[in-house]
Length: 241
Image (cartoon, rainbow, N blue to C red; front, side, top):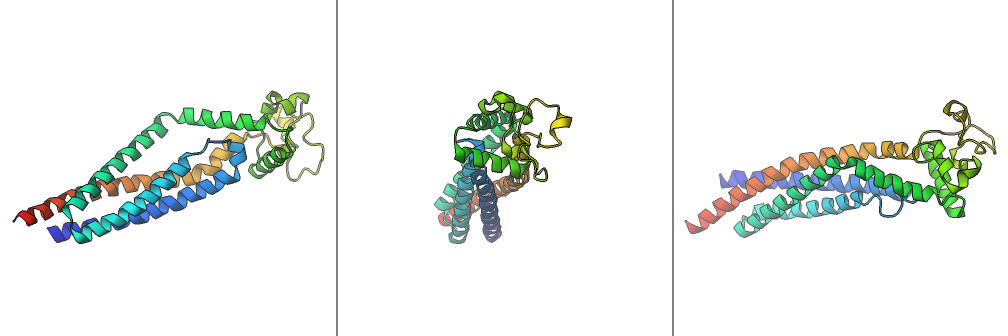
């Protein structure tokens, strides 16, 4: 029975190690996009990928240590390992519950940060270039839609930013007097979709992949903790025998 638990624990921890590597890779991809669109998201908005990256690195280390603990069959090490896995599992569940229960709050925080950035348009050349490039890349205009520019200082004259212009338009003045037009009229020359929806869509694939990996890893962690406790019990019993 001990050999089976030892082998099972080793295999499970190897799976945790691989899952941890996958989490690190996926989180790194999200962080890369976060850096790409960092100016649009605003300071301190997207810290979740960083937290997941740190968690992934921690999981990699724990998976490695779990493999070592299974090979050495140390009762103390196995119990400590099981406690750490359980604590991490509870933390993952708490994080998942927060994300599921308060998605609207998270989205509002992101939107507020984006609005603050858009309000700076026209005051700084570097900000202008960045926002224009991001809108052009995501094919979007404003936070919710192109009419948002009515609420920004730059758009008080009726204009949207240059980045809202469609790539194939070829009109240097396509951004002038557009934020009060109807959608049917405006979309002939500019993008009308909001950047929040475009950005959300951009991150959706990585977010779903992270969720799937974390769900699978949670199941593996439960099995690993159970197996570690059983092996620790068998190891402790054998020492007293």
